[in-house]
Amino acid sequence: MVLGLSIETFTIVHVIISLVAIASGLVVLAGMFGSHRLPGWTAFFLIMTILTSVTGFMFPIHGFTPALGVGAFSMLLLAIALVALYRNHLFGAWRWIFVVVAIAALWVNVFVLIAQAFLKVPALHALAPNGNEPPFLIAQAVALIAFVVLGALAAIKFRPVLEATRS
Image 1 (cartoon, one colour):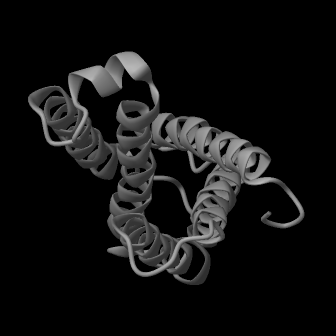
Image 2 (cartoon, helix red, strand yellow):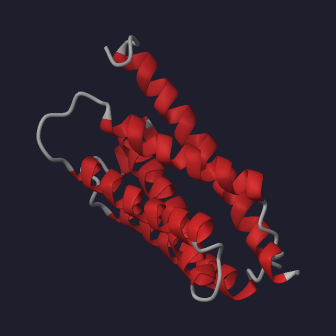
Image 3 (cartoon, rainbow, N blue to C red):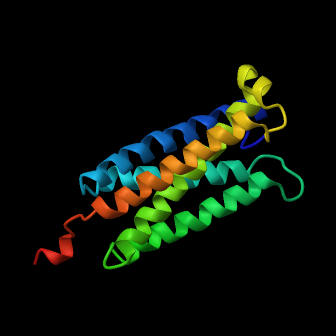
């Protein structure tokens, strides 16, 4: 049991949080292309992505695993995003730093989604039972390339008008 929930129920809650984090991250990414800060969506994305990692750490895992490493990496990215956005208010280089780390955190969630899909969806698992076969590697490579391209474009296009510069 985790937080009074069965492992199965806790897993469902974790998956829902993760999917909501991905969906809200895509909204934030779309906003970046129009130079829209979307403060509510951005805060929601960051909170849900933090919750994704935090709930991931709560699973009864013994010893260090790649999943824990991915969660720690995500938390590092999110810490930088929080500093860039809320302490440094996206001024100067913090604008593109925020874009890069926020998109990287979104990619981490998608990376895990793809990995879990290949583990749990029978048709995908049959294509890559060990997680190192070409279908899995191609799916991960396509996602990585897409996020690198989208992140670069977002870094170029995201130039929000900052409240402190209006006065």
